[in-house]
Length: 328
Image (cartoon, helix red, strand yellow):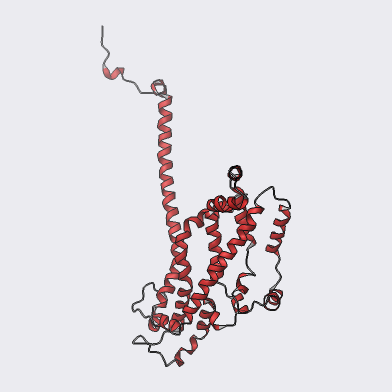
């Protein structure tokens, strides 16, 4: 038998030859694996880009406050020569010495803490005790009460009627009750709490009734502990509102011993032009603080207390707002 030379027996490989030996299942797996690897690379790149964008936005939000803190410790020469800085070359405490020297800031802090703590407790008590019955579907006239609450969100009595009510009719002038009672409940915050209560399983209340619990015990021992996220979020809203209270405090309180922190800082900011006339204070080697530095120091003093509270309720704040605002 004659043997055919190897070169003469060789021929080109065609598509039919490849299809004859190809495995469709194996090809599909290889294709899916290639796509998943490519998609994974794109997802990682998008995730890195998202993190960078969030970091830039966070940095833009934080930088102004860092500049205010740095400026409150800076001297007049540095504030004049450097338009923006995060770390001052020379630290000076003269701005804080000026706003703390007469003790009015400490008195304002004490009054602001008292108004904030007591006012927040009153707000939470009124809001929760109204939100719980309105969250029960079996309450007769429930929709009518909810509509009455919603109307208060759209219309208000106005400044003059409110002033006459507080000062003349209720005679609450120069008392902290003038700051607590007019805003004892926010309709918006109450609706958030109601929606959260309404989203809790009804089986919990039914099981408590079977075990002999009444409405008050169910509310205190079951509903409130399960609603910690939304309660912490709403309490933070109320606390910030009381801490920043300015207009009502200016209208209803005239006693210097009852001034809030916002009123004290306002007076200091407006009196910064009289610093040069104050010769009773030893400013040291750094000299008198500039008016801009005093304004920055007052901003820090008014803001830091709330910033110290926020980390403790951050977890509940995020969870409560995201859940309580969509349920119901």
